[in-house]
Length: 405
Image 1 (cartoon, rainbow, N blue to C red):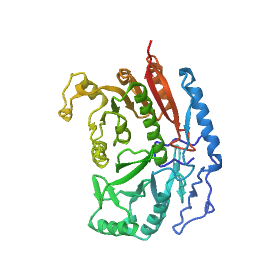
Image 2: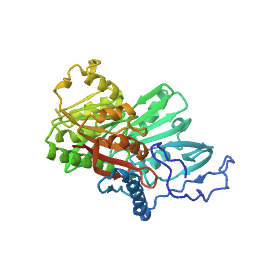
Image 3: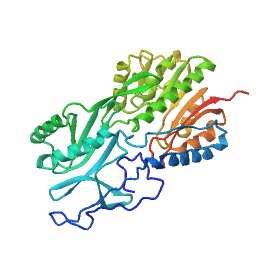
Image 4: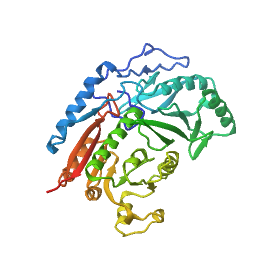
């Protein structure tokens, strides 16, 4: 299968027919052979069966931990992906979006539509291509295009070049931005030109409530917006279960990004303290706290290791100078780590808490972590979130509660 535009999507689990094109073997005006056309595998009729395969695999993989029945959260079968990036390939005076087969950087496939991406991305793909096709200044040495969209209808387009961007480029880009109706960013080596803004606004609807998020270009965001809403609802229900049996207490979140979970969970806990190492994400999170009028959420720019040192009194950080850690009653920790999962020290750290809400993008590293966590905790909730339909990728949620003798 031609490589998908983001590295967080895995190859499709089923065999892919070789891409074909009615123009294969023909040539353009410059004499170059026309590329094959990317053939997608998006077949809504097959979606339920593919999801069932994932559910069966996950249930078998984690059976040794005796989890409760798996809750399966299905995605929209089309137009679910809110961000995408494409190479822009040049052939004579013509340019087009391109992908490559895995392990083969020589064979180019032309992308004419991309049905896993949002309808807005598909719309902007064609509009942008039509507008730059005859504009030498905007088209020349443009090698990558990135799209970021939201469920609430906002969008941001980043154009990445192999040339220095000057005032003449900026004037043409501003005219293009006006025609498209969405903000543009130009990037080149050691250059970033923001014509209007470098972020989008998102509003997520969760359990009848609206949560507002600023999502910054280059920062991590959940790519499947509808699935993100389902994950947030699941996490809120997990928090309600904890509160029903143990009363409300405080939440610690590690790897919080732009506050995706913290913002939506703030009303489910007395106080929330979250940590994140990315300055870009922390800056967006501070805006999200303000936009959602939250007064019980603090997000600090610390690694999980630094937070442990601060909590134990081993080090002091100016980034925590107005935070009294001793005043918190942390009973629950939420972790959403990268694919590598939690390292050995982090696993020991989260074991200190009565309740663990763990969202994983890699079943293998989650399984490894649970071998330790389930020595002290029991799985009370077990969920599959299909972030990436038609791929092998599985997002998993587990809620664990401390065992009592």
